[in-house]
Image (tube, rainbow, N blue to C red; front, side, top):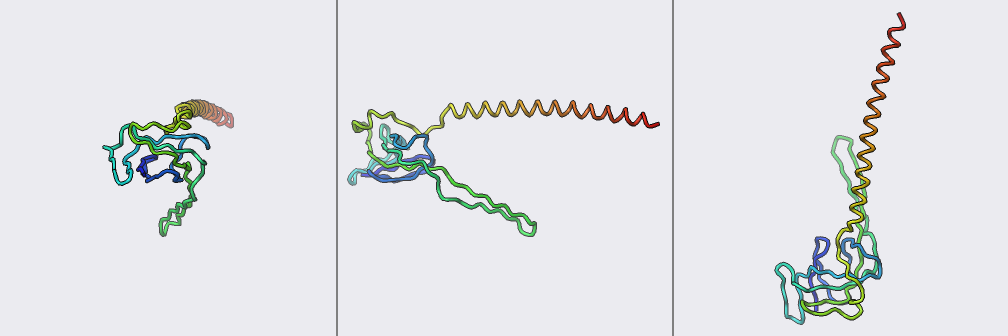
Length: 167
């Protein structure tokens, strides 16, 4: 029995006890997650295809680790312009072990009923915190611009007074 699951914008063919690496999910190692976007289930040659997903079907998995992928080198160059830039990037990943494939209407195992289901969605607390810090930063920039404008006018006035005193 296998299933095709969509998570993180990619599709994965999974079977029970498979270990896969997916885009980062917000879960701790040891947590259980349910992947609800099941596109296809194959059970001994009998296939069920969703349009686009199968209602009620889920794939249960256990989070093994939160890791990062291998480094990717990004190199930019413009010929004859002496322009070269090198950057590196490591994508965050979650390592999952598939524990069960549940067809539509099937009940999960007793162990997974006790654990709460985690869905790969951004946490609202983190997005609110980012918005708050962005507001603070914009307020600081506005205050700095006002203070800078006052200083420049004071310098101009002082320069004019000094020029008149030399005669």
